[in-house]
Image 1 (cartoon, one colour):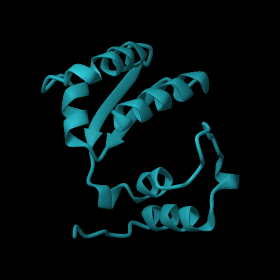
Image 2 (image 1 turned 180 degrees about the vertical axis):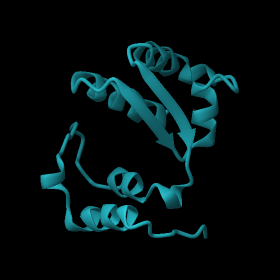
Image 3 (image 1 turned 90 degrees about the vertical axis):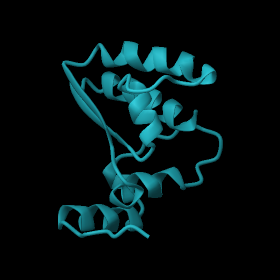
Image 4 (image 1 turned 60 degrees about the vertical axis):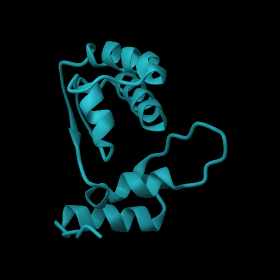
Length: 115
């Protein structure tokens, strides 16, 4: 449910920023398969799935794919940040140094190995 909520909130943000094409990567294979219609969602996920699919219809193009957590270090880092109970949107100028380092490693093609 947390992953679905994050995707739903991210889609809202993307649309509000005028983004027309989107690629969603999640390290939850179950969520990816459910959104892509490859497996049924659980009873509690139906509301979010419906909202996500309606939002996806507003994009000119979209992809939802699975990625391993090791290849999604920036998202994993952000998900662990303590922001209290409030919604937070921050821009690259606000990123902590550690997040800048992770993104720099990604740009340079650093290879991450699964544990």
